[in-house]
Length: 480
Image (cartoon, rainbow, N blue to C red; front, side, top):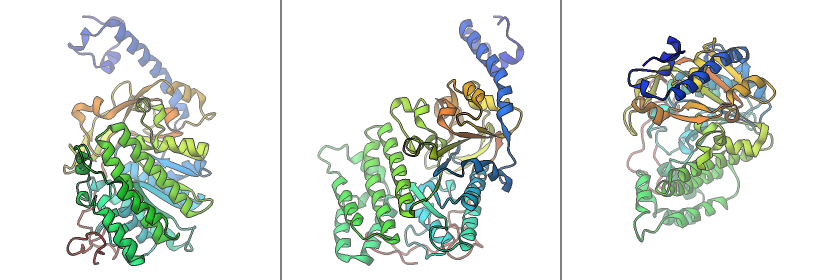
């Protein structure tokens, strides 16, 4: 079969092989027309693209001064294991903290684990729970050399600022820390009000057996006659919410919210994926609002999370299924005072796992599929660039990107053998993000040992640390 009118390059781009030649000529012609349109549009991208220095370059952050007046800047990532994404977000964060008054860094991590970093950068005593942070899969997501470098910078920065609103804090937005948050609440109550602590332990005894395997709780809720723990965890949340305001009580309150959120999340996970996804992102958004309120008037936050959480879900095919995320909620709540910034890459390596709970591997990232944003940006001249997608900045760019295309998302697992189904979804990029950072070839993050890296100062969250002896248990403080 001869495909008349197709150049060799177009045939290769279509991936036409002997088996593919059975596709209807009309479909092929339609794809060729779209490719020709994209070929012309690449020139528009070249004109709008702002070449960027390497992500680790201190000059990188200056490109983002344009977002310094925002209340919330959300920084995404197209994978959970790419070094350059962490480096780029770190340089942007430093610039926004140092030059634009941002004092909150809120990340897609568990609240009690992030509290170890917050304690370290404020030179506070190390929290008692968890005994060592970031031990839950995927450990490499925060326990890596790139995050460690930023943590040390945050500590040095805070040391030059007076205590209070001028110092930056580090906060976890997620709700997976059921066991550690149970302990944090009961340990705090045991030191402040033993009577309330006893009542809290009684209520938490309902969900305590699931502390290490919370998914089992979700499965058990399907059993006929099973009594859920919803009322019990809500009762503890009400007790903690009634405590006087203060930093330590606020930490306990957030952990109580995590326990209540985790109970709802794992119960919903067995009722439907969209429901549990929305509960998780609603929890992250509510946590962000709580931190902003706690830090006082004028507080400004930076959020680190995956593109799938940061980008406006309403601009994706996922949004059509009823899914929303923290980016969409921020855009609705803050308007133009929230700026959503996405990241993308074409190829290289990534730290990921082949299945949930498996050991991490450095895996090769396949080049972007045709008909994707990645393939379009790969054809542009710079190999690192920023696209400003705000209205009124580059309208020809916005118009050309407003045709729905494939966008890639690699999480903690990478399944290249099912790449299209597992890692691509359709989106309209200028409606999803206010800006997009393209880094054509990237490499995997460098994990730090889960046992702790030697040579770090005492109390460093990524350093060696003697774990508590015995089981922590409800209301039993971990021993340093």
